[in-house]
Length: 378
Image 1 (tube, rainbow, N blue to C red):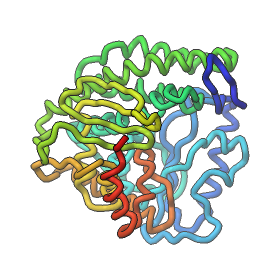
Image 2 (image 1 turned 120 degrees about the vertical axis):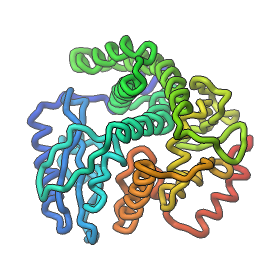
Image 3 (image 1 turned 90 degrees about the vertical axis):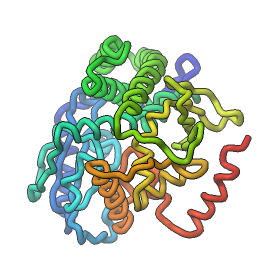
């Protein structure tokens, strides 16, 4: 069903679901993967706050010597229609040897062991946890938040279920950063109340009214994202870990989906505008948000190579080598992606979703290098 409201196309309209549907989806998922040879354990993370809006998130832990068998699916299209709706997206697969680093790969919370053998979980010091949280906020500001909350308004099309989830994610990121920085991002409390009301009373309103309210919330989200980007950018550059970059340039240009990011010390907030050819959205963001991309692009492996390929020229590098928890996180991320590639599992990294397209070395990489000379012309 698609609704046309105020010149916008609204699709994937959430529908009411009861708790029993979530229990059934959980049972189907666990039964399917627990029966596959090489599945070591299954964990669930996150919470179901609003049935019908919320989804289920699982971590499937695989043996390190796991072997793909014909017929095994890593998508969710093997489940019943209601379970397909509840699960909503492909889930997270990880080898047993990397499970201890899962909190360095994704911002997981409220993790619950569902079945299989218990896996040892890594522990982070408060300082390392704070650093990883800053990196996750930076990543969200250059991946899924602008892709959805700025991308949808640009084309006047909105996936309602996805949009309300990303609006809630924006609130969580702003709150998390506020706790780390010791002060609230301007306007977040009022915005949080609006998003809580939007989600809490969703099924008490008509689909048309929900379309209008979501559209209005995305308009306000643009300002919240800009203020958050400004605050995070300043905070990141004030950290001793954000060291001088090389080469000495006035800006770096990075691509993510149909977005093009211009990182520069001249940018204080976040400003967006259509590109000259109208096929992309240009985002002008603070230099501090480069922090996770600097580290990730400096590693060795498929994810680091993918990120390097998204810069229009040589990717930015710090003058200092990585160490501590950051080095561990970058190595774990690359090892995770390499494992998925070797096992033929094209899912698992939710933010840098295109990394698996850059696995093939040689011709593909050469073509990307050549394309850099022409990518941003026009």
